[in-house]
Image (cartoon, rainbow, N blue to C red; front, side, top):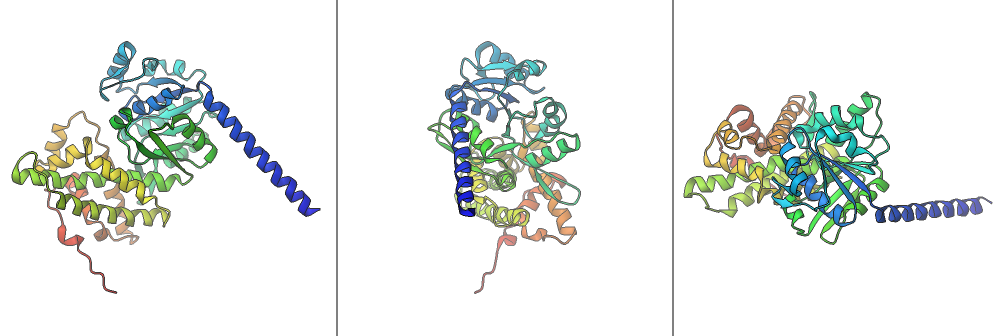
Length: 378
C-alpha cells in the first residue's frame, strides 16, 4: 500500500511539474507587459531581446533619466546607449509610473548602485506584491560589522521591515550593454530563490545571441559579479601606468595580466570567506575580463594610473556613474572592520586595499608588487 501511495504521489508531482511547464510555455507566447524602472544602458539594452521575443516594453526613467525619456518618446533613440531601441518601445517619465505599471506582468529594476535606496523607498512599495521582479543592478552593501549583503538580500531585508514580503531575482555575468544591444553573443546568469520565477524571466529574455544560465544561489552569483568592479579598476591602473611612461596608446599586457591574476586570487579568497566553495568565481572572472576592456571603470583606472589624483580623476569624469568607486570603498571598509575583528587578514588583499587607500586617503598609485609574491612549498 505504501509503495502504491508513493507511486501515486510521484505521478501527481510529475503531472504538476508538466502542467507548470506548459503554463510557462503559454506565458512565453503571450505579449508580456514588462516595466523597466530606470532607463540606464543595461536595462535598456536588455529590453531589446525581450521586445524581439514579442513582449511589450515600458521604459520608466529615474529622476536622472528625463533627457533619455524625452528623446525616447520622440524617436526611440537612447542618447546614452547611442543605439536605436525598438520603435514600439514605450517611454515614461517617473511621474507616469502608475500608468506604466497598469496591467504589468513583470518588473525589471535597472537603477545604478546610487539608486538602490531610492528604489527601496520610492518604488518597491508601489509595485504589486504578486509581480515578479528581476534586478540588473550589480553591487553589495556592507554593514558596521563588515557583513556583505547582495542588493536582493538588502532589499528583501529592508522591505520585510516595512511589512512587505517579496523575493527579488537578479542578473549576473559578463555582459556590456552596448554589445548586447548589437547582438554580440553574451552569456549571463539569472538567479533567484524560486527557480520557476528565474525560468520565467529566462524564457522572456533568452534569444539566439543572449544566452542565460540559471542559479538559485543569489548570494554566490551577485557577490561574484559585484567584486569585479573594484578589481577592474585595479587592473586598469596598468593601462594608465604604461601611458604615463610611454604616451597615450601604449599597451603592455604583462602588467595587466599580473594584476588580473592577483585580482582573481583575491576575489576567490573573499568569495570563499562569504559563501564557502559555492562562490561562482567564474562569473566574476568573466565579468572582470569584459569590464577591463572598456567602459567607465577602465576610464578612471587609466586616469589614476597616468598620475591624476583621485579627486582630479573624479572631476574629469564628472557626471559619469562610477559603480567601481562605490564597490571599492564598501569592500575596503568591510575588510578593514573584518581585519580589526580578527575574522580575516587584510594583508591577503593588498590590491584591493591599495585601491581603497587611493579612494579613501588620496594615496598615489604605487602597485604593491612585493605583497603579491607567494611561497608554495610541498
